[in-house]
Length: 119
Image (cartoon, rainbow, N blue to C red; front, side):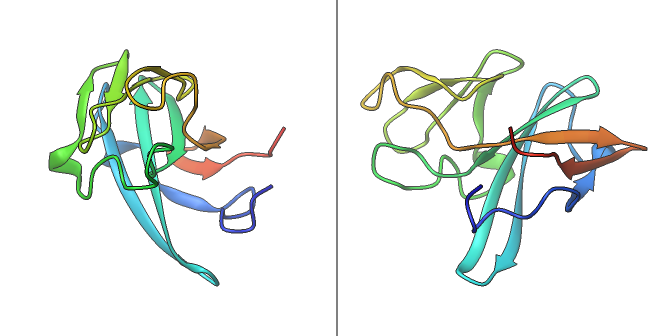
């Protein structure tokens, strides 16, 4: 597990805060600075990624309104437009093709989005 990522059970937010078929950026303080977590929602399932493109390490977007995506299919980096698959963060087009976003496993319990156990 990456030490900059919250431990399993950490509450990210409420499911209702994330639009179905959309995404939201959450920010949390950590011992190493601020963690910026991108959460994508499909029905009652959420996919979490560190909000950092593997190409240059820049955020995919700096706020929710800048997120570029096709609902339930892909999300793009605002800087180089690398395209990542929604459900696993794999880059299928762009400067970092073949790389992946850093995944943060999430689970939904009682309407809350929580960090899940790491595999």
